[in-house]
Length: 185
Image (cartoon, rainbow, N blue to C red; front, top):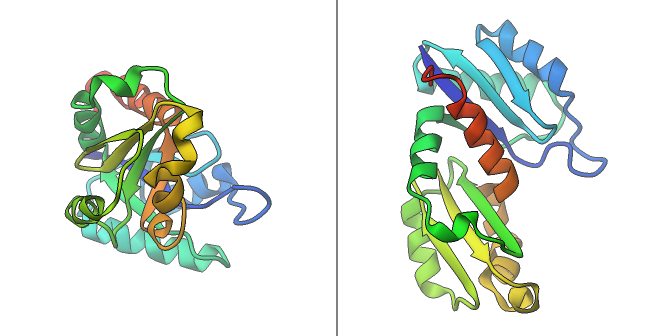
């Protein structure tokens, strides 16, 4: 049995793309996922399954397409991989920052694609770490933010459509939640 983390992109932000998490949890359970749980209202879900990941991805895509009248991009990750990424984060991830985000790769993006793109960008007062599941990005101070690649590239189309973003606080709480499963992950 594998523990998974399902991250949805762009749900429950403002008044658009409303997804009621208790309803979605029931829908996920109805396709055979076990111990379905969620964290906050922005599309962070957790469950167990013994089905092959490729089958799960297809079942999730079919479910979301049939139940919602808007597209919901998502990434499905083994929870243990997220914990491993957290174990290798640089020291600055835990420091006080103006902006610190985990940018999870959606299926149409990879860490290799991002690494190539980052080489072409002029970086300002910012730092990043390329993880297995996400690009971890830091902007230390507000006064430099508008000049950073985070503001000019990451938060704009088309790049922002290739990732689903969780701020450091949300990411850290997800990791604590995953770790607290007493080694069940």
